[in-house]
Length: 153
Length: 121
Image (tube, rainbow over all chains, first blue to last red; front, top):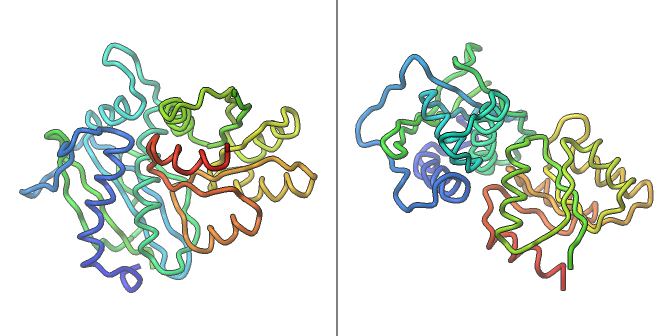
């Protein structure tokens, strides 16, 4: 995927894509999502969601955040009040869809992309030897998020 | 006018967001949900809806496969895609198969109105 995506363009574009997704689906308040000014680390209790792009330049787009933040994102996406329970199925569905929409838009940067896989969600990232190409660090209302691009070649 | 509409997406969360956004756009439609292309095809056969709004990438049967299957059966039901990916190849496939439009996620109520209203006139 590295040969297919201009990393300079990706770095500039990934925040714009994430901001558009957050504004439309999660949090319409301007400035709620910001680039992280300092390096951020996620807790051990994290949630990872990713989609893979098949084709000539196989790659992966992955979203990572603390589990509590992922739950806040789920509540915001579904407009579920704080005193209402969220099922595990809806949690996995919601976090996966955020990765799916972000990944679908990032895929548009790849020339002649192949199909996108259905989203996967897990407490640990996949350990399949993918090569990290880029790591974008973001902050949503004080909560750290990372969006990473991987080559599967 | 209350249209009968099928919203097809394998994500229940995304179906809820699509339906919520349709309401925000002012469409008070009679909506039936489908969780994949095969279920959407069955609903199209059974309900003869006025419109199908479908995701592209779904298990069992993709949105484009479902549209082609509808046409192969002679079901002339308008269909628009709402999908997280939209390559030029996909747009060409959608056009060739007779889809009305292709909306890329994320979307807003304004996106829905701008895209769908011309087909309701």
